[in-house]
Image (cartoon, rainbow, N blue to C red; front, side, top):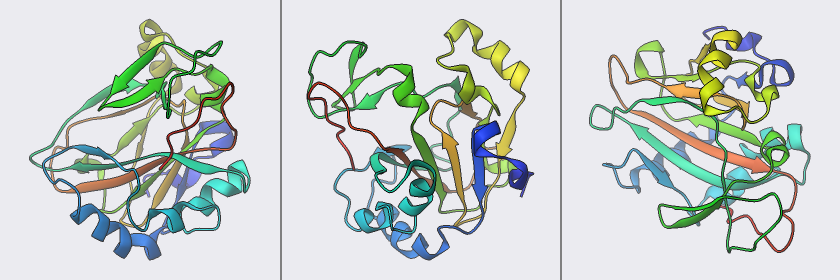
Length: 225
């Protein structure tokens, strides 16, 4: 769909898996109904039923394990719910911070920040480069319903200064990650991505999960899911 079958994780930094989470849809739809409807995005922590889906042998987690190995584990989960009432846009950027349980000053980690009451820190670039993000679609996402936009290959450029992002997107080009309900997009966490406002807004729920396969140093711990 939309040329997604031509995307390769190794070269493009993204990969399309049609129907890979179709069997998880009933549980995810039930979860989405239990969350606040007026919020564009909700951080999930301790949500009932997620553990089995995100485990390395689960419907969703097994996709990450094929890339990162069976030691991979979910370290952050968000449920996005874009609708006519929450029809936002997001400029081109890289995800650069991780969420941890407690602050321990560690070489290469910083600055620190608080987002939605949770402790975040910017890790060394290699930690981000080794991570994987999965987007599980609960609704159809045609071109009119604000698909994720990615800049293929930008994941291999390391941490890109803000002043260079526009040029990087121009050089890499863009790809719209169209999807049907139950489809999954995998992408390297460092890839440049963006989202426009939906031109024909309707509900667009996405479970986004970051996976990592390595422990943090010096007493730092992932907050996890």
